[in-house]
Image 1 (spheres, rainbow, N blue to C red):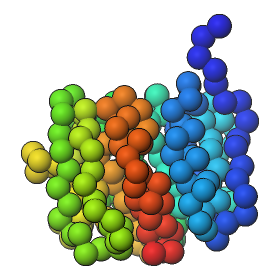
Image 2 (cartoon, one colour; image 1 turned 90 degrees about the vertical axis):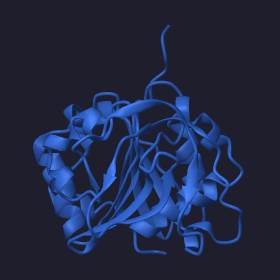
Image 3 (cartoon, rainbow, N blue to C red; image 1 turned 120 degrees about the vertical axis):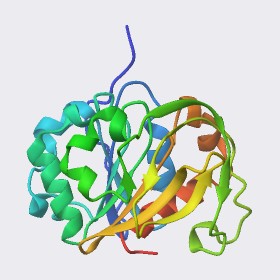
Image 4 (cartoon, rainbow, N blue to C red; image 1 turned 180 degrees about the horizontal axis):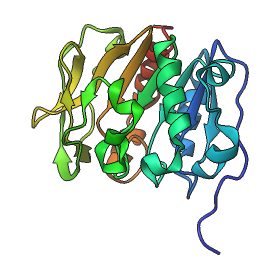
Length: 231
């Protein structure tokens, strides 16, 4: 019968701000971060699978801003090819006008997904000159434990089975890194908007231990809130 796919946009309860999560709908892995955001106070998440992008994702900054305060882009399976260039230009314009963006690592993310040749490369706080997805266990070092992302708990992240080989741009703020010195979480701005780049998968495979971590929901919820200027 093959893997089940989500065929309809999943809406959430009314929240303080609206977040769109774009990720591959193949299998069940997209449900983990969506549920974590659904139960996090103040966030109204909406899921959109790759097969919905052509017909449901607006291709103007104004169209995006009318529906969401922040956008999360994970591994869609096809990378940048799953979007039209107008849609990617719209997302960049949406951020510069004050919207939020959070990008997640994966086998078809960043440079490995072809995003280095798109308008998103210009607004990310990380350089995509490399951006390869490298297998192998890595551990996280928190560089800024005093920040609100880590408030109230011990940020002892589980190991990841792979990560993206990213490099922070000048002026960006790396708040956590892997033990090889590449960034795990990088904060930046583009125009009036905020961008957070995460250098690993957040829901399956090499990120399975992360999604099972007791503080997973708290951490990813705060990351999304930060992009929406709610933190």
